[in-house]
Length: 219
Image (cartoon, rainbow, N blue to C red; front, side):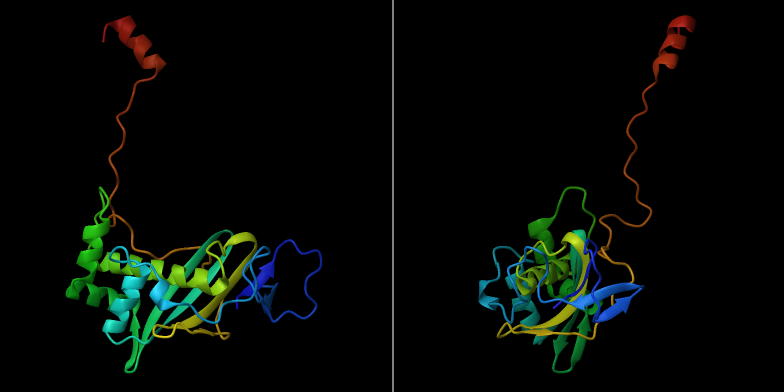
């Protein structure tokens, strides 16, 4: 379940579950005022999309093929933003971070396959960045299933939470001991362009004064 702070409530809760930066948070059973109910207990791994490389179902299959049994995901949102964050893949031997997974996917061809299917004009990402993006998309897919609908960040509230998702049976395990992100409503995806890149500036056009001077002086 998410921790939830309602900005529009007339009366703050008398016994909040947590108070963070002076704001009262409740450990809330649903993601939004129009949400369908409590958070889900499980999802169906076989039902995830597998149409293209990088889709959630294909990423799940890849994670299982390299020994991952579950993933840990955090999420936050509110107003009109919602982010699912892939934190780690869990294996019998320990955790694999996003960076480790991106490097592994860049080596074993996973990132290259995603890049070939999804490259956009002007995109300078490499295979590792495409794996990172796919991990983010996978996390957001799981958060939408966990909270019951994909628009979990739409509403006058602030929420955050975490869970683990089993990759074989699709069981969600809520993680109550989670901290509010330092920067909420933000993404740490790599930039589309290298550091320092700037798109070319549009050609400058001369204003009315310049045109008048050209007519006046013949240039």
